[in-house]
Amino acid sequence: MTATAPNPAAEATPMADTPDMPPDPPAEATAAAEPTAAGARTRRWAILGDNPLQTVLATAVVALLLFILNDHSNRLDRLEDAVADGFAAQNAKIDELDAKIDEVDRRLTAQIAELDRKLTALIAALNKTDEVDAALEGRLLDSEPAAAGPGGAPG
Image (cartoon, rainbow, N blue to C red; front, side, top):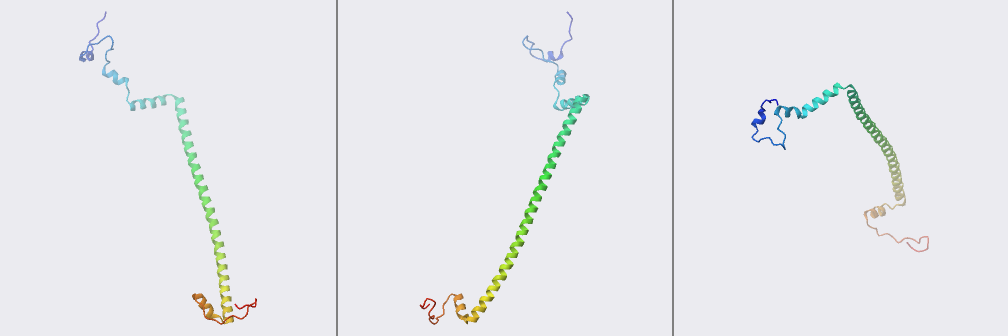
């Protein structure tokens, strides 16, 4: 049998080793066996750089991801352009309808003015200006009984 060097960690442990439990490893071995998250990431990138196939595949994945994101951006730009064109077309139609409405309004205003002029001339020719003014004010003038109308009866 060979003699082993005394284990300083085992001597510092107050409990004696039992056959059920393995002895505690030294603190340096525990720290080396459990890498931190930053250390794990660093090793993954180092391994990735060492393996050319993984490097090419990772580059291809990143390139495809950028292509897809750029493609969606282009689609959104095209969609925005299509919506803007649609709004421009609708605005043109609205402007066209406004012009038509303005033309109809001008014609109706002219027709109403002509009708007003003709009615004024008719009232003046019949010498019924006082009766028409009274009717417009909501009152009736006492007038003579009307002569026999078309049916033979007065009024």
